[in-house]
Image (cartoon, rainbow, N blue to C red; front, side, top):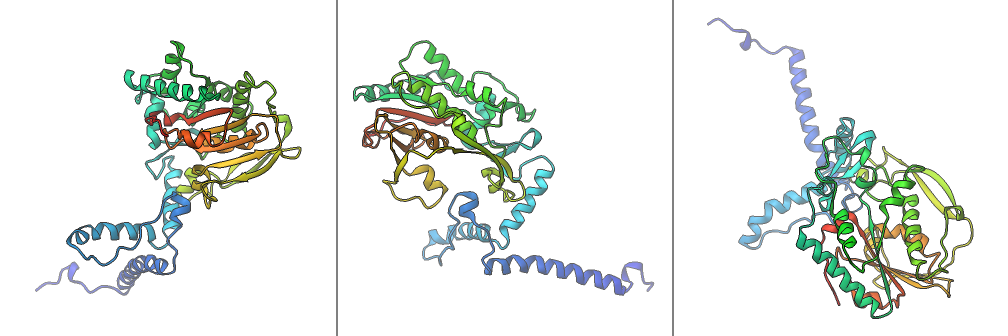
Length: 388
């Protein structure tokens, strides 16, 4: 029989090549397992703002046996050895190509990051996700009922819609994210109020668009406004408050020292495990004079993390006995507003809106003179509800 080329014995270099390939493959299997044993999986709580999947117990029922594989997969996904490093590497490769490695975000022009899926924000920006006629009427009527309820108790109510970053910095949105209808949910509300309503809306869109000509007012790698943007919102709210309480002081930018510093801040880059590699230049406003704050309280419990800070009720007392008391029924955008509001009101209380809720009893427990219902623009898709 004549030997063919395929039957020739392997050369020494070919054997070495196969051994190296097998070694690399074995290391690829072993290193994650070693990292998992060492506890080098990654901090799911800090990065992804959720609890990691727990190790499933031994199945004791048929139902448990059926779900065991998926529960074990979830555990391994969250505790995979060197998970953070691998996710970060994957994210850096995607960012280098100008795309996000996670479908909940998108990367626009000049490297700006935007939310893509949260609250249907992209569809709202494009004018695809809009109120139906009945949904719009229900939104307005529910807010009016809250307003009337507060007015019967001598409390004035203002509504402040925190603009989506997409609305203020639309020039950085990618070309493919075309706007189908210029009248989104926010514009629909304005048009409906113009037809006749007692609701008092604080315009934040106009002053923020004006202010961005001088300085950046939103974070580049986060969906929120920065200190400068929060101050713009604070000033717009105080100007409306002064219509009924003219002596409420407005702390202007001249009352603060402005510093810029780089910091790994963005919630989006943080969730992609690349915040350290992509620090953001951030403004920080600090009072030139002593603060009026005299004390803080957390009626629901002391916060232990960022999510607690956003959701727990906070009460800030200030040495301003002649000024009114304000309650922000709010989401995360008002957290930064409170840093300025606390220098204008006798008491500033922050109560989470529960994604469309209005806890009347909790609001009135703070004996407010003014209630500001602050809602992120993407939250206009939440169904408002009345609560005791």
